[in-house]
Length: 262
Image 1: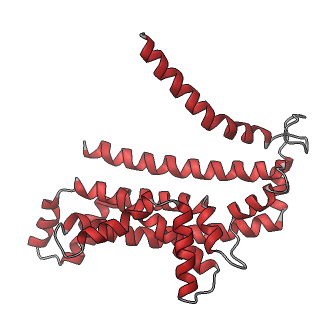
Image 2: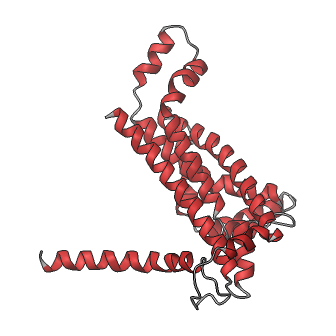
């Protein structure tokens, strides 16, 4: 093994260690019996029970779940339609502008997105609450769904759809009975991705939320400013587990679809 290869491996190991060791420590100390987060006093699950008994955290969790489900579902529909428009209709007036507007949140800093949405809601006199958080999450997660579905549509065999049309099916019926079942794994993967992105969003929700719309990441952030507790570690561990399962599920579904096609 040459010096350059050793340098690359060392850099990768150090990079992953820098990213994931703090997360691993958070998970480990969520099972700490001590109230002091930096002092290990034995294994215990008492902080998970305390987290589930905390009414404020539970209410914030329910708000987060409702927002994530609704925003992910709407973003999936809009993202799928946007992907179909970009793949099937390569030339139409304003296509470049439409494409830029769809994918802009991918490269836009979350602070800019949150601030611009806040100014929009103030301009249209829309009271901040759960509705504004849902609209904001739809805006930034729709592009991720569009990317996933678009990559699947680019490899889609159009002859299957054309055969259905030749047999008398309408374009709408051909889409729902032929196209949609084939691209459904990609659509589901996009939904899971949008759900996980909404679940752990903090910055945009901070700008667009209002009374009664405090999400779990916002609740955690407000409590952390007063000091980290093992109870917060337990809640964060649960969030990490949910996000990890969601990402792995989307990845497995996508890989299985690619394996079947190959």
